[in-house]
Length: 164
Image (cartoon, rainbow, N blue to C red):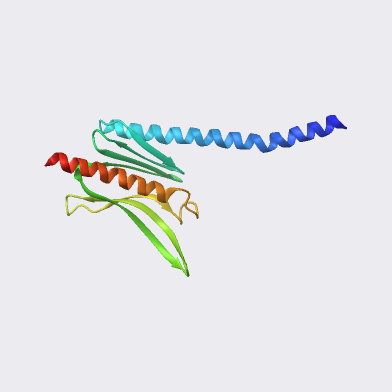
């Protein structure tokens, strides 16, 4: 009886643990693939990723030496690759689309917006979160977009000081 109970217990543990291990390995593999694609994009612009973050199906990186920001986001069969040269940017800001639901404020879209020195060039938005295409809840994207906005604006301030 004890052997049967032990085997059943072991089988239940395997049934619970194996899927977690497989999902974890697939997530790591996918994160590495995103980083590799972003590094390839950086290489095309004679840059190297010196700082980066990844979340869900997206990644952002920066070459602090050349002042390029790289972004990759995958959605179903669509892949969004962006390279932004910060020497063409005046300001970086957090863009939020939200709606009020009584006392609650629900964020529907969260992006990092770039305003360019060329007044005729439209603002570029790198989407960090969209409730209609991704998860229904934020999971660190707000903190991440604010972090990157701060990092990029610091870089822009240093670049502006060097111009003077």
